[in-house]
Length: 87
Image (cartoon, rainbow, N blue to C red):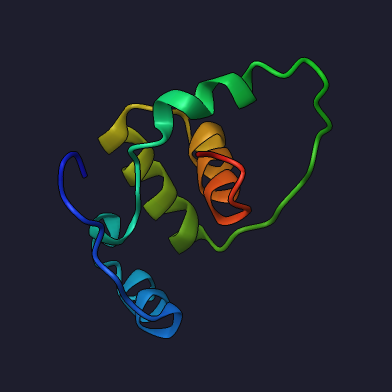
């Protein structure tokens, strides 16, 4: 969302829209993708297995294709943003 303020929404409303397969990208801040790349370069990694509902994975796949990153990196981006470790 270059140059524009990210839309605000409650967590409950965001979850509802996500569950209804609506585009929630206007509520996400992808401006930090560039600085996020340094976090991905960390050589000390551990594997974590997470089970997602198929519907959730389809949306992650769609969004990852839209912004041109792997699903793995999209998940890392979202987690890093929520943990407030990307500035």
